[in-house]
Image (cartoon, rainbow, N blue to C red; front, side):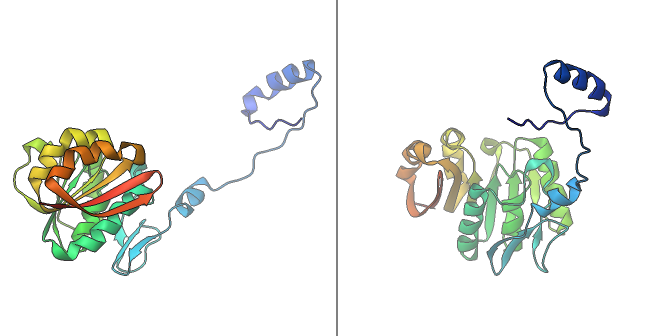
Length: 225
């Protein structure tokens, strides 16, 4: 049996003595020289949603792409739930003028909606997320209303409401989500075994237009009745 492990240089003597006392054969070697920054950057490729909508990091973006800094662990849209919401947005944007991104995170959906010509508001209870979203808007020269305003305190209505949230939170926010949406409501971030909870609070006021599944995630495109 072979065990590979890493230790600091300061622990070399102690580790050698301890393992030798157990009758184990040792072989020491220096760790490989890895450019971790380059490896990290290489993990973020441009995300192509359609010919008109591409999300990309600042160090690898084609002309016309929406630039998103992956900072704070939000990524640039690669997560299945974000991709599903982006595809729904791309399909619905031409029939909308205004959009609300609930739980905006790094602002990916808000940025994409603005790029597609909508007047956008983004909200999130996390002040750090809102700050990151605002920085991403600034990187793209976009004017987006970003804030920590709770959904139930938000005023006005929006043609399209986007909510990439877990099922229990959608259930909690169902009434204000429905009150803010005049035409379309996109719900992403729902696990298949929790979909019934969401449908239970939204079906009476909406019509299901499209249901996308990227197991175990479900995205619902709903039209307000």
